[in-house]
Amino acid sequence: MQALEGLSGISLQSLPIYLLLLMISSLRIGSFLVASPFFGSRMVPLTVRIVFSIALGMGLVSYLKFPPLELLVSAKLLPIIFQELFIGLTCGLVINILFSSVILAGEKIAATSGLAFAAQIDPTSGAQSPVISQIFQLFLLILFFSLNGHLIVFELFYKSFEIVPIGSFYNFEMLSKKL
Image (cartoon, rainbow, N blue to C red; front, side):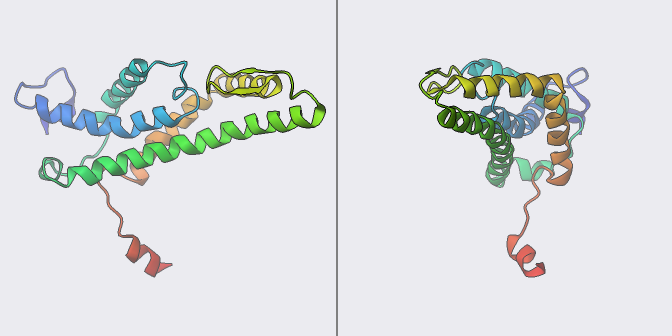
């Protein structure tokens, strides 16, 4: 398919196919960025998240294996969209839970040590949280980016396309019978 070769040699007739493949490849990464702790916060505008997910999707289009085109232009596209959104939101939720555990630890430490009164508005969530919790959150964020955690997360996210390819629907009844 010529649309998978990239934008440099694309013809005008295959542009809608390329845009469809770009949309499908951007769904999983875009929903992950919406649910992830740093990119999903209010500090990063929605337009930046959309542009970043489309840019990452453009990088993924040429490497991913897509289902046949007949499947993508039929009504079976809707389950593919929901599957991609579900996988991206689940991955973002897992990382959000890991980051929230540090915030909860900071709140418990502040409450037991008597520092719970030193609270201010958290810029990421908009809620009031103890200063200790915000220090822990900022420390974890700096540690995460300095140890290239974001690159590891995106590498694992790229490998998720090999584990659960686009358009692969699993029959959970057959899976439960095997277990």
